[in-house]
Length: 283
Image 1 (cartoon, rainbow, N blue to C red):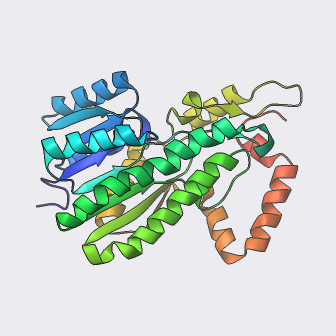
Image 2 (cartoon, rainbow, N blue to C red):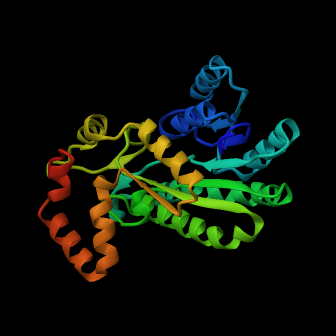
């Protein structure tokens, strides 16, 4: 029997992108899968595909920034499924823009989904996992939870919070036989740019959103690659899973070697417009 065969998994934010890929990978590995998403249409398509593969699957429409909805989901899930062995807390949104161009309302929106969402889920599901003798948790953060890139202050802050949460729980939950791994993807071909606000403009005030969408579509890594790496890492109990390493791995390494040198490079790259050129944006 494989590590995943016969286990019960939850994947939040599974309507598209990495969440969908995780759900499919877990199903292929032998899990029965419960999935959530805010978009009922996307959710229905994923459930239909899972069941078409002969997998036991159920979809739950949940806004993970809303504690009442998460509580309702938890109650329905445990009533129908009994227990969870693998919890993939993946639901998240993106937001691009300089700090001075990001409203407080947008900060609350990103923090609500990307940070409070995992807190709500873990608050309700970890006690049940302890009660049932253990399990595995995969928290989708981002490589910008390890190195803060410009144009993403709110998103970076939320993802740094997820990394801190995951690293803390990896220590605290070990005695309860619960593994915790952090998934830190780079630039992935998903809907995160298309679905979220983006306040990055050129000198004439024109939006760079189309250029960034094109960058992610042509240069982004396929979600299935991320899911495969995630399942390997979760099985091997890896603390942090950075995939693909090439996107921002060198920056992560530089920051570990010298924070001073890292920040000097980041200032240089930002002032010279290197981030703009890399993503095909106009200044």
